[in-house]
Amino acid sequence: MLFVYYIIFFFLFTVILRPFTTLIHELGHGIPALLYTNNKVTLYLGSYGDPKESFKVAFGRLVLFFNKKPFNWNIGLCVREEHIPSINKHIIVVLMGPLASLALSLVLSYFIFFIDLNEHILVILALFNISTYYDFFINIVPNNKPIKLHNGSLVYNDGKQILDLMKFKNVYEEYNIGVVYYTNKDYKLAVSSFEKVIKKGYDKPIIYQFLVSAYLLIKDNENALRVNNLYTSKFNEALNSNDYANMGLIKSFSGAYEKAIKDYNKAIELNLNNSIAYNNRGYTYNLLENYEEAIKDFEKAITLEKSFAYALNNRGFARIKLGLKKDGLKDLEDSMAMDGTNSYCYMNFGIYYYDNQDYKKALEYFIKAKELDSTTYLLNDYLQNAKEKLEL
Image (cartoon, rainbow, N blue to C red; front, side, top):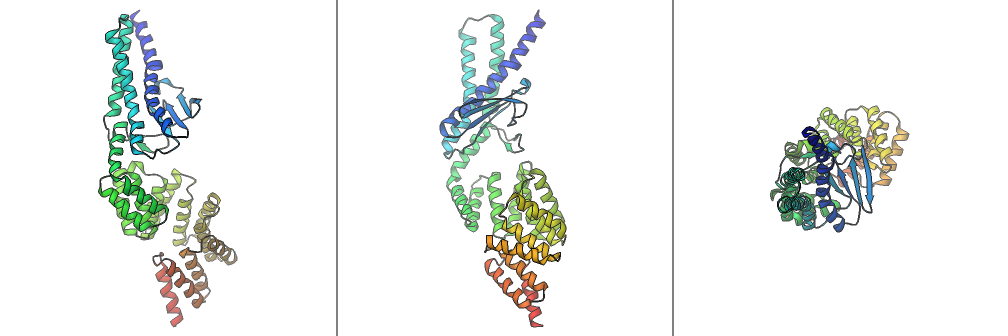
């Protein structure tokens, strides 16, 4: 009889009680998230964001995915479609998860200590109560060990998120200014703002990602490498497809082409639709004079992004080098029509005329490219060669 009792308790605990505590915790996050946003809020019960092997229940903007395997129900995730602009509101959303667990614990404690219950029910409630207090403490005490979600991204427990949000309050102004500068393509000022954010102690992956990208866009490869090395040393497990694409571009500009190709391969492995990774890998194949492989990458990038001026320009260069001059020139013309400020396009026009021994015309395009962006990779070499040919 005792054995049957334990079997029943085990069933109740794993299939009903533990899932119930997870549900209460995630609703603690989800309900204030619904109040503070206007879009959908999704709760995953029994997974870290995996809708497969789950059944879906929707209540208006609240969507729940219940894992069909109850033994996984000690984990959960709350996902918001809309960003919460207020840091204080964001802290409340994160904090309410552990507080919901604590509230359940206090209710159970009341029944255990102040209500006359059957001995067996009392034992079940006591063990259940221990479980709810455990949920509260493991979530509220900051833990530096990241949690890997279904999509591969990393997050931290509620306590660590709350600490990070409180730190973020101190750099909120600089961060927002940096984002505005970056959005407006004022990358030098964006770099200045994000560097201040890191100096104040808020060194999260998003800040490093902005910095690496901004340094690359202003062609400051040395600082891009410096920041990227810091980033990878701290957050190696959190690197995503765009991170590897940026790492590859740093290596491409440093002349480490084969190593760059490996980074682009990894970027594409993580995201088959990363058009930038395809374009940059193709660009590096161009530098290696492997034009056939380069064209494959540019065509994939153009398929993913129809108005990708850089990919069109780079494909034009590869086609010209393979002797397909008519098609190559068409690509360069289409690229320039999309983006008349692309220094690489002017440089590639110059290379076309240089290869056809029209050095005067080539020099005109190289000079225009330099006016647009004096840091264009290899431009000074082409410019010098054209001048020497004209002097001869």
